[in-house]
Length: 106
Image (cartoon, rainbow, N blue to C red; front, side, top):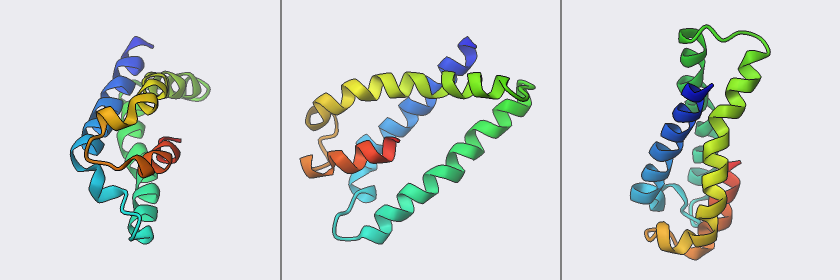
C-alpha cells in the first residue's frame, strides 16, 4: 500500500498548493453559493482522481477500503498540523476562513 500513501500525499500537495495560490477565490464569505459549489465539486473531483487508480491497480472489494485509508491518511495527518499554523501558510486567506477550510478538508 505504499503507492496509495504516496498518491494520497500527491493529492494533498496538489490541493494544498491550489488553496495556497488560489484559495481566496474558493472561500469568499460574501458569495456563499460559490463556496457551496467548491464543497460540492470536491466530491466528483475525488472520484475522478481515485476510481481510475483502483482500476489501474486492480483493487476490488474490501481492498478499496484499505487503499482509501492509505490515500487520505497523509493529508489528514499533515492538515492537522497545517491548521495549527493556518495564518502562516495560507497568507492569501483571512483567518476567518480557517473554519471553512477545515470543514472542506472533511
